[in-house]
Length: 78
Image (cartoon, rainbow, N blue to C red; front, side, top):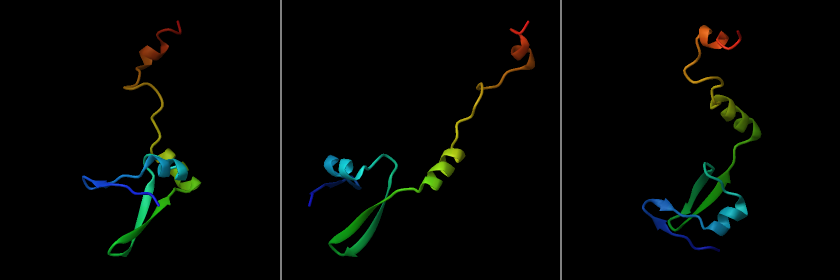
C-alpha cells in the first residue's frame, strides 16, 4: 500500500505507482466510492479504435498556413 496526498483539490499519484501502471498525461481514471473512508481507482484506457478516431478528429491541417495564391504557386516554375 502506498500513501499519497490530497492538496488543492487534487490527488497526487506517487511516481512509483505512475511508472508501474504506465500512467500518462491525459489518461482517464474511474473512481468508485466503496464506503465513507475508501474508494477504488481504475485506469481507463482508450481502445485502439477510439485512439484512431481521436487522431482523425484532431488531425493537424496540411499545407501552408494562410494558403498561397495561384501566382505564388507558379512564380518559381518559370
